[in-house]
Image (cartoon, rainbow over all chains, first blue to last red; front, side, top):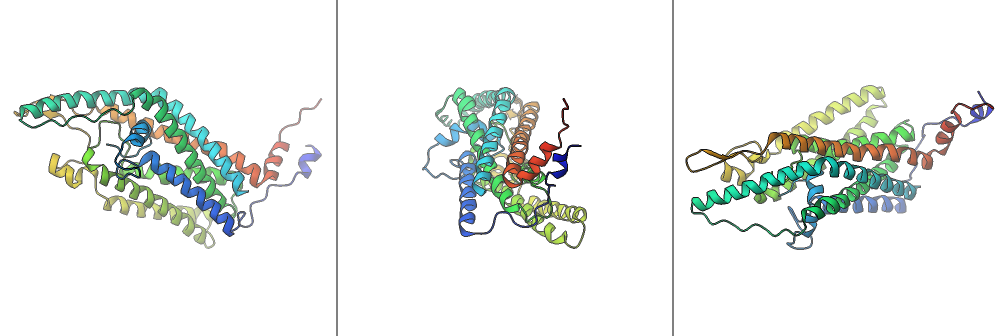
Length: 75
Length: 286
């Protein structure tokens, strides 16, 4: 065994929250989650049960195969 | 640190979506093609039966995109964006969990977060409302079907979050093992109640009125006025294959997110863990 592995820091379990609950951090995490859910919505839900851009089917038809495949309900 | 984690989550997710698309393009598209061929042939027979019965036949909607665009571009963009979005959600959940979920190390924690994403967002909702190929699903029930599916996704994710939260409290009193088994069972019990309360798709009002009582919307054989079967029901093998490939694709999405994000996140959160592992490699003596 080499000396470098003896002196290498031993992996420690985390002792407390790493990402603190500060306003800026919370805003970033929340914003990211909302953006991800919007993507989820447009790929899977929009122009089926409800529609943001009126009664067209362009988003629905473009993502058609992926929508079926990812398990979303479709026409 | 959060920014780095999110960036890496999105990257791992996009790669996962790309891998799932390659799989889908090779294996699932032929199955989708068979389902669409069945749907088209059935529509022709249905129109003939309707005309014979003196009904007016509604015109089919226009094809906005060709099948090639749907299969090669739409599915690819859709799966990559879906993967990136799920990678972002995993990164957010991971950042929140770090240090708040007991003594687990950063790398296995990333694997667990991705596993819970798979269970909460896809696997459990699938158990109630499984994925269907084109040709299955009535146009006039898309409203309630879409809403029911989202209720299922939201409930399974919310209950999973509650299970983890309660599990953390229980782990102070019992061992981690016992707390995990107890909250796991509680999750199964709670989600079973939700599934029992939500209606089967065949029980939706429009379906009962139009087709009678059936469990699902999977097309049954077409019969003429004398009751003779003139067109078969939806081919069972195509449905089974499609669902198997749908599950496989989601396993690929969440599996690649887990395997790619875990080491990337560890290097951000605990570089000493990553470095320690490097040092444990056997030395080549010269």
